[in-house]
Length: 212
Image (cartoon, rainbow, N blue to C red; front, side, top):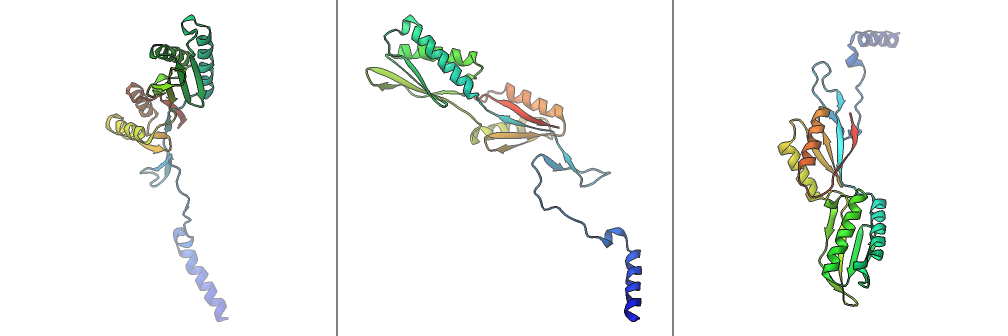
């Protein structure tokens, strides 16, 4: 009888407690996605709100590079000024090797390659030329590398530019070989894109993965 009365009293006391005191609050231990930020909201303090974001990348279409090299090879094989010069353009992924009889013909090979790359939509900003070196059979050779991705140093330069000249409230973060930009307004992100397009960063940039 005493146990039953005690249980009844406990239930009565528990029913008088506010709801917040009755049930524990569950807290998620999952790490928040980088696109999510905790914003102060007077009506809903501590609520999670998604912010507009986009990614800055530096990518090259490998198939278009292959097409450009193929077209350059065909042009060189049919041009009279390359006849009997042992001129070749060889590709291994994003590394292209130019070889011919003289530095004069080597310069002409570079022009052919660049023209074909531009026609295929490949930016020359990502093209890096190595030193001219002597090769076999009295020829000269030059290695051309097409850079892909944003290096850590270039990412630092982009982040610094956005921090110094971007709209207030916009932030950026390096993520591997890309940079993620976030802001409260989509217009602010468009302003950052204009800023980066106008800057001479030495690499081709694309803007992807827009999220509102």
